[in-house]
Image (cartoon, rainbow, N blue to C red; front, side):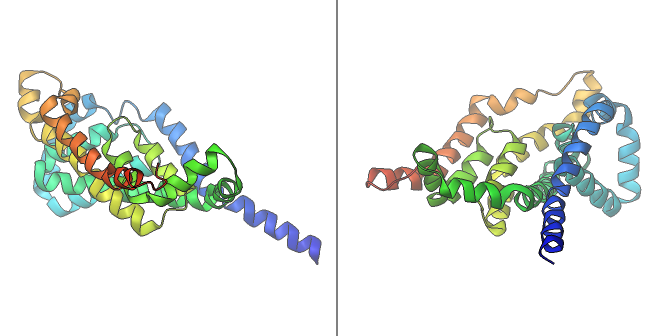
Length: 245
């Protein structure tokens, strides 16, 4: 009986890695086969068909768009930036930004849950049992989860995929992950959605959109201000002598 029980536990253990393994496989296949289909050129070539479909079935277009964005993020497929631009192109800055944020947040939650189910508990136990510098970093992150979560969403240099995985390894509650993701990605989403909203004029001029606009001072500085605001609780704790990251 004990051998059978161990075998069943082992199978269940392997089963925990199926979702994250599926995501990794689809991500690799998507990077190979879908790159040309989820590109700015593809959007440019199919813009009239997309607009016609939106005008004929607005609600269906919204649901299909959110579902497509969810799949792109959940399986780390290429084209997340193009999808954000498409949201602005089809639905304007608002409600396009809302649709973009919704699809991205749902996709991020899928990766978060898959990673936590497969690796989160094992990594968390190892980090809790660790000593020295790793233990201090882990404790700092645990004590300042809200600040950390908003910072990794607001700082433009943190890859979105990494920002989805890190909280899963730190045993962040799902509700906290959802709230920080949804609201934390709004500033960047609004910027790129607004760029997408102006794609009609860009297409007419035969140009390509300026994706580096987020690093323009009048946009970057407010985002950095939000980063400073998110880090403020940790800074106050450190100033008062608490142990903060």
